[in-house]
Length: 151
Image (tube, rainbow, N blue to C red; front, side, top):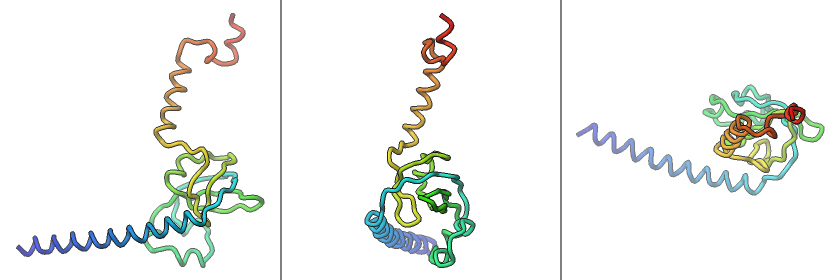
């Protein structure tokens, strides 16, 4: 009986913590939506690393929650105008960002929120599958430069 009561209390605590975290996340999402702007950046490098290793100023590092300092986050080293900076990136955007290319992205502070013309993982997989299928097909147009001279 005591185990059941403890289990009910634990479930209730998790329920209210989840509700509180959802409200906090919604408020942060609204703030990000208000402050985002579209910028063209040149992506130098991208990696998943701890935020403490990113080289942010001490004032920024002090505001980061303890749990976030321990977790690996997607980081992007980019050139914005003449300045090279390290930005934190959304996980979905991180997968779609090309390295060594200029990309138009939506930035809110030091956080990359979105990318113009971004494709989802499923769309990228379909494109790769179509390219493989096209290259293995029997058409001469898809076989490249030398196919023009074999006639």
